[in-house]
Amino acid sequence: MIRFFENDPYAPIQYTYEVSNVLYHKRSKFQDIMVFENPFFGKILVLDGVVQITEKDELFYHEMLTHVVMSSHPEPKKVIVIGGGDGGTVREVLKYKSVEKVYFIEIDEDVINVSRKFFPRVACGVTDTRVEIQCMDGAEFVKSRIADIDLVIVDSTDIIGFAKSLFTKKFFRSVKNCLTPNGMYVSLSESLHFHKDMVIAVQETLQSVFPIVDLYTAPIATYAGNWWTFSVGSKQLDPRDIRTRQKIKCRYYSKEIHNSAFLPRPLYRRLMARKLDW
Amino acid sequence: MIRFFENDPYAPIQYTYEVSNVLYHKRSKFQDIMVFENPFFGKILVLDGVVQITEKDELFYHEMLTHVVMSSHPEPKKVIVIGGGDGGTVREVLKYKSVEKVYFIEIDEDVINVSRKFFPRVACGVTDTRVEIQCMDGAEFVKSRIADIDLVIVDSTDIIGFAKSLFTKKFFRSVKNCLTPNGMYVSLSESLHFHKDMVIAVQETLQSVFPIVDLYTAPIATYAGNWWTFSVGSKQLDPRDIRTRQKIKCRYYSKEIHNSAFLPRPLYRRLMARKLDW
Image (cartoon, rainbow over the protein chains, first blue to last red):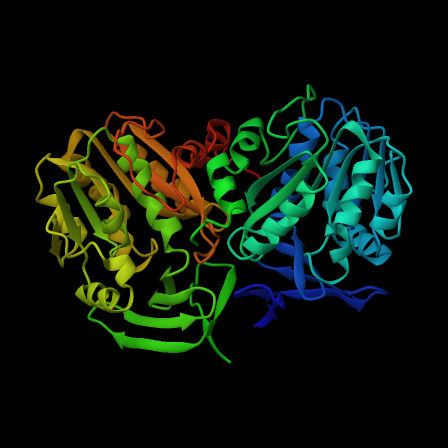
């Protein structure tokens, strides 16, 4: 049996997947890209040795990254998606009829092309006429915008390597500047089980820029530590409240999931005070 | 570097842990027992090649297995704990002052002794005067009881091997017979990510015996599939409601966690109708 050993130096458990078939394996200008098949998860996309999405469970990550802020905004029209070259986040954003424009900013064009070829159910939205693809650094793109963006969704690789620039105070300031008064920002922020320090660091950096900052989680089996966090920065709207009137069809996300996903405030306070004894 | 490769034939991801030190490794009458140290998780207890608890994260499993039903019961006095030889569940049960008697029924005495030696923070309650240890088959013990038990908590190994007998209709009937009118039963029921069919099977078998059956989850990094489920069978009380007036100190569980842990009803209905498309 051929096996894929995940290569995540920040994970205290190493994950191993059975490989039925390697469909693609090449180095792009930015990273090592691999697609393989697994009997349980279907096709799996791997960047620099770390699993990014699997056909079976990508819905949990993409729905939870996207719909919390999308549903909390009364009527998102212009959205920036940074990273997420597989197209899953763009697919979810396009479910809202109010959306007029999605700026899809992925630094690595090869990830988009590989995903369109091997993950058509995930990448199905990237050719939508409302989507403008720009293959460039997300931090650079955001700098150039004026305040006309409703939501910025960062769907990057882990907070190591070249994605690091998307988690700095400088970047968060640029994001804030490009947002409308109701604007919100969301990104992954690693695992509460494995990377509490990183979660706290992202929250604190956001707090130095945004007046409202919050944290919610989702269970994702294929991301190390699985108790995956998402960090929100907001200019004035509380992301815990649902404001959308649009009906969207999801496989996991719902208003009940929205309500239960945010960390209870006492637990959140203990986390940020570094008083969790685990 | 020495590594421990988990041997769980039902997990589509294999987990690997770094081993700093093997502290114990022997076969008991029932199973292979190992204790090793890991730089992140501390000591880890392994039975038949599958991780049971780690010092770092055992609290999530033990608190969530125990406190949902304990807090939902108005005043639990007599509790049966089946399995859980490490003592973690007994420790949590003893936090309630109303508890007069804990029948601690673990088939394998060696697990209790190994845990007392290597996991004193977990096994600390097993010598409490309210605890009666009986090393026997939990199914046999339950059969002999009259209806004087408030809660039955099954803290077994996975629903394979010799723990299978604790998930049959016959066993659930014995459990129901030994419960008071306010009585409840809870057990682990595997992962929503990896073992949906097992989760449904446990729920359906419970439904054939108990009038009220429900399902809640907790994120546990060291159990395969991590989105771990717990199944409740109840004679008349809704386990979603908190009734206790006792103040207990927990590291993760809280009334907010209780409320958000149960599967939202629409999602639960889709699960049981086998209409979840993941």
